[in-house]
Image 1: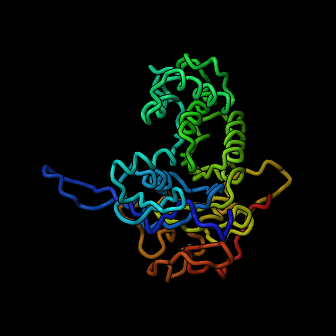
Image 2: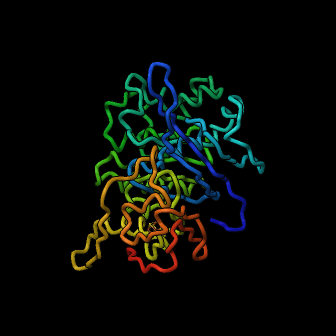
Image 3: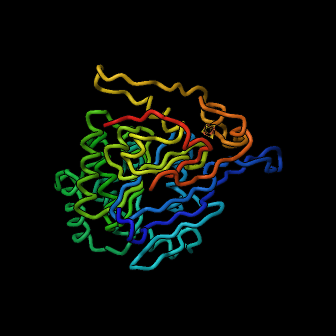
Length: 338
Ligand code: SF4
């Protein structure tokens, strides 16, 4: 990340609420606030990890940025050819042009590939949709893409069922790369894979990032995976970012109790290294009825009276480290040294 460069993506106060309806007339009786005021910037060539438990809103952030879901409020700006384009308010025509630059890799390589399509059709589909009607030209581009992700070019007439989970995820990556994107939202791209295959796919993503200058928003719940690939990390809780920092800063000196609890739950491979475990009791709060004050207060071991009433703001407590906690400066939290 270059602090003086302009961001490739700017997200400002993004909100995505899902209505809760009841009765015969589908009367709206409330909202699930899946994303509730998320702001961050993503710089060209960097990987920002977005982590949190299931239900934290991290996947919804990724989908709303790409307009797979329409935002309820807020702005998303994406830089193309030196100009910022408003993604959140873009027309269908503008969106079609933007999607060349912004692609997604999905969590489940089994569900995300059509079993009745060959690799040529799966990987070549975005090329066809964007005007590459010449079949020969498409075949050559698909073969090049398969090679790029570590598959054999002659496999292009095979169907997804002939491939392992790791290979299917490579097919998904090849499809995402087809139109030379600048940014990829990777939504838990290795969590459905065997541990032995996860490292191979992560290494591939890193190699591609270096070769092609890609920018990643990497959504995951596994902190070890996020540490491996990210430059900065944003931690989400009940629709909000509660901590955002450089990857080493966040792992070594966390400043939010939720980050500390997530880190303490990561297994340490060396049995001689002891770690203080911070119990994370209870479930993620219901985003339809978030607790008053700090949404983390019912689970926080450091809670004080004011945490139950005053909503903490996200503020910079150390250079480049932003935290949403009233006591961020006073707590001595335990990190996870490398
Ligand atoms: Fe815990 Fe209070 Fe900080 Fe919330 S504001 S994380 S309840 S100490």
